Image (cartoon, rainbow, N blue to C red):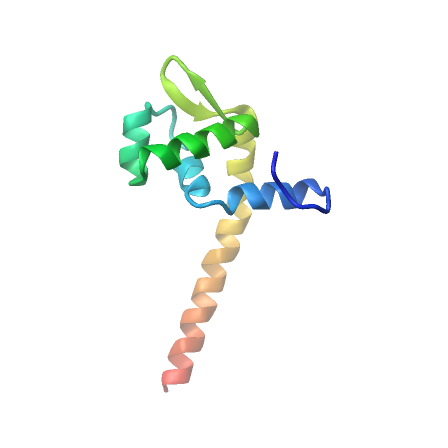
Length: 106
């Protein structure tokens, strides 16, 4: 797997998640399996880019393919759950930014 030259797993993960559409693919699989065309439509992504991202996410053991289509693996589900605290942090951050912007206007 491509990643940081530092050899640190967190850097390799952040590299993978930072690739265009990677997080969107993971997000769209949160509710269950999706066939390729449905996933493509939900993401609004080209077939070639989706193929590339799915291959990378499968290689990383985050996504797997089955009879019902593509789905998050157990590791993928675990990763998605780790986004919950980040989501809460982001909501507080957005509120603070909004409050600061309103204060600057006044």
